[in-house]
Length: 470
Image (cartoon, helix red, strand yellow):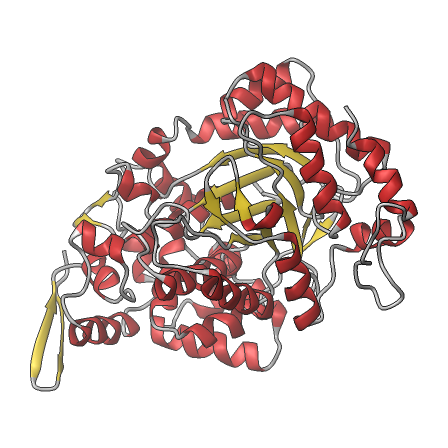
């Protein structure tokens, strides 16, 4: 344990460990207060940021916040670290790394930033984000390129994809299909048509997979499907010969957190191998989809490290270390879903969303965000509008959209299909290229490339309506 000190305004601030420096340097959020690790004052937070800025990046390779011997996530992060990729910044401190990133972003040097990914540990990404303002996070993320593909290509510049989320409280086939139709007519679904099932029944999971696959196959839609069941359920679906495009799982930043989700690294590897064997891709072979969220480890009492509790944002970044190992097509943080115990209000949700997106992309992930909140959180539609537009400016790979912004199965607020259209229009962004070409073929785009205002009599609407009939 190394004690670090700094003097500001005539007062000496002392931090007992690197873990404490990381926690105290974090912008305010309710989860860290709940865990007892938050800065006690803004002065202490600024002091911790000063100390953190002087920490050499290489320190994170020798002072893990969660023990190597006790935690398989730490072992994965350190054992797969790429020294050659790290070399360009290996002599820098956290503060110098911030300046390096901002300089490369200003120079539009995407290759330099993106080439670091395998050389950075999640703790390095978390650390530098803590000494950056929101605009810094946007500027660097915008110049960080991560491109993936299965049946659509995601992460290209000038594009904003969306996950069409057609959830239904009883997994009713007609209700799910109607929501899919609604999304497709609004130009949504190029990232994935992804359903959260109401139960974790293997039979129901297979039925939903077959339903979406039938729509995709019938209309030759260049996208992928996913039923967000537990990975063990998806393994059973694979064994039964179901049309699995993507293996999904929520993951955390510690071994104990993943144990709480009922998963191990070996189990994730087995499921990925099973999906790869199906060879369902046309433009790529990224077959995994991971979901994360600040506070998940804390909620499972799985946030403890070598020198005490670890802050929730650092643990969130460690979850990205897990996801990165399995070459995902998609990763998203459900930024406001876990509740006000972890992110209390709109300011905290906006900051967390930008942090998560920046850190994920910096670590080489195809990062998306579920811009969302639960109804007992101090967040509203104005906050989600701000975050959506900032993420669009930051080059976010995809966002999630549900009919009317209201998920009737999970009971939370996300973006609507029209919110995605607004972000694309305002920021001059387009869907994934293969999906855009399909929309054009279906006569769903006008001459300017915007989604048409359709009537039930329009040819494309008539064709897709046929898919909604049971």
